Length: 400
Image 1 (cartoon, helix red, strand yellow):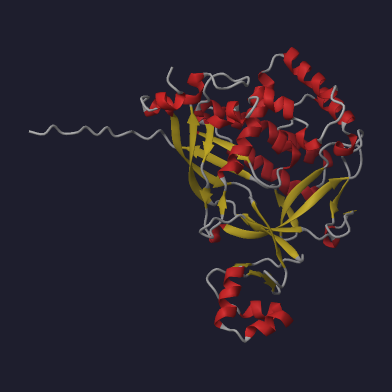
Image 2 (cartoon, rainbow, N blue to C red):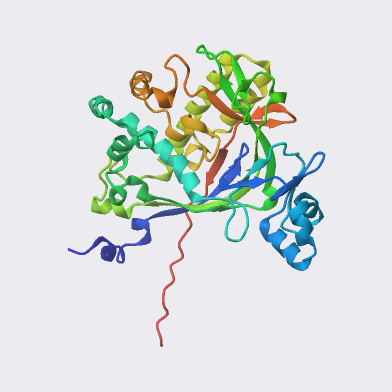
């Protein structure tokens, strides 16, 4: 019997999987963290209404050209940073009032980009939700019972058995092997500096909230007393392209041990994403409507615009909405796929990780502010699938 890899050499490309070019449009600000927190007076300086980020490569180049500034930098780094002029510097028309800000992920070419893993992670949430929904009720109950019978549960591995049952027992047989997403490049002029405040519920009815202050770790009513998060984010309207591939070859050799036994298609993936997006938007709308606060009306309007951006059913197989990256919170990262009764059982099992049972969960939301007012949510994109590329068949000419 031939090995799968050897057999693949004789199969036509259409049997190995379909690759598509995808156009991505940013609908609400997106932050993908580089892991670096830029420090005030070391990586950036501020003016009256602006923030100037000076990359370390620009600082080193400047000090190499002006060695007399090295001693000045150790005494007053902010003054030296203010004097540097370099094309790598990023200027924003918002003053960072915190001592640090979150840097956007950058590629080896020093440009901002969204890793393909961010898109794949968001798609994983949709697939997890769909696959669990399709499970027969007895199998769902067995998985929940298996979880509850465990004597010790580590939060980071709490869903391990469930994920293995749905996607596959190990990386070799994991369904997500069939989904390949490329990185998405952007330019520095696609970035902006935004302030993000954390809304925190303060009562079990979910009707009273405050704004969490990063310094005191308290929730305050007056947001003017709160220190927000500052982050580089992709601006709404930013566009780029990437490639996505759905690999069908692996299914032909029965390599998967998860619940979904047929190759994934682009139309069904897009349809599932739009259905999940609509449900997620409606759940978020309910959360903000129950707060009944005029201060949060712009956020409700942003949710209305997102729902209007979901393609109609006639176009659904060709475009879809997705919430990705930082700021989506527990709901968008896990899918919140468990029924309330099952979720409450798990919550009782892990009170330290899910908070007091009488409090709503999750009780926080990250909100992007504009002009010191709540404006929108983070992480929403629209992905448009281009039609399949026509393959050119090149035939060799016979020599005369």
